[in-house]
Image: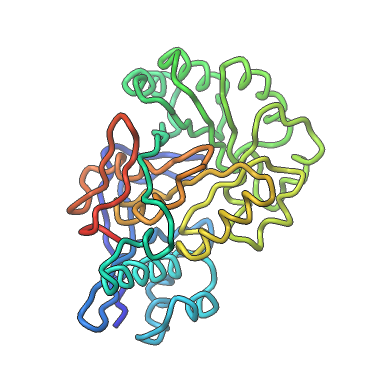
Length: 320
């Protein structure tokens, strides 16, 4: 039996990007129950990709109750619904076998990985205060994509003068804005810029100078996205809600590395259950951004562990 349920996790603070603001993480939790064992997965439906809680629940309801992971890959498109079911099936398989998922895959156990901590899009003054509050963290990810981004960048660097910084424009810039900001990004020690131009309108990245690494997010969902990245991006952000689960994410990881791309492992804003499968992708990643649970007011039972070494793989009670 496969069951999907809508849930919501209040955020510790309002979270804003170039497109919207939110006060809670709205997720779908999937449970797979078969042969006396139980597996779980979580996804975050994303309106940017035409998804809603309702559409994802409808997709999950359409599946045969005993669908396999292999059959699932063609039964649903890459996206949130397939992700939650795929990850729930991996969890179920691990519990059936009495092994961890990485053992089933023949992988070494994941080690802790330093993760970015995200500062949402706010006024320069507020972003400076937030940067100062989190200045001891080794990597800050700054949400940009609006008027006044130069002032925001300057303010964050004042608040966290020694911290590594990456920025995410969430498709909010034009080629002119990006080329105008690029010298300042370098001057302020920004190490990477994520999705500066809208997906589908990013061809200019192949024509303009890229003085620092540019990472595809909205422009890269699964392996079918790779041909369109050539010459435009240096890295790509793997998110389970885009790939449609861990199965395709593992394949995309190998394809990116084989193609000479740098790899980022990212997330939507969800609970530890959503992040847990992604910890299997962190080894060898240039950037890890699995801070979703750190933005919540409350998390799942048996949550992921975070400390100065980063994010740890899940314990079996959570997932896998």
